[in-house]
Length: 139
Length: 139
Image (cartoon, rainbow over all chains, first blue to last red; front, side, top):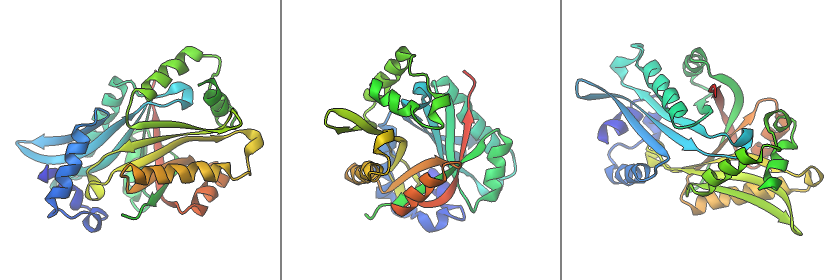
């Protein structure tokens, strides 16, 4: 679990958003994720070291002829693994797993400042057809 | 259930994507949504008529200090109710309900061609900080 948090924090945007020392908060979140059958939190392991992570969520729905969607979130690759193709492997796994779980649409949002990330997903076939809007709620 | 499908289809993009006659497909989807405790499919009712709908999904996660997010999807308002403020009421309800269910972030994607929708969400405080990418899977 700590390895996932470390990956989330080792990121230009994550550095400001995460607080790896607050293990209790992440422990609670981890339990919530693990107890929800619609959530699939995965890691990539190389020789016993966690080198990548992402979360896949399965969302049944009514629109698009009752399409089940999947949402990919929190994709992170360890610093010294970037450029190795591991990101492609992780996302390709998530797409295959989405199909296996009955989804007909995979979606994700990427921060508009991450221009490399957008190109990465477009190379994998994703279409940047939408605007991603977010509203932060006060704690 | 039929009223929800009718609203989904009565939309510039939905018209091509939905097939209201295929009730079996929507029935199956409805059962999937209703049996998933993370999904909240709601309708707005005026004098016994369904005049609006949206789906709210609750997604626990690890990133952003273990934030639980909500995702709003499939927001539709009946043709003769548009401009009445019902959309604002529906989305405001979804935001309040997200907060009540422990979410600290509400997110949605809006088709880039729906410029009015983007402005509508921005007026409600949403920030268009992300690009929404989608990958349709072959059936």
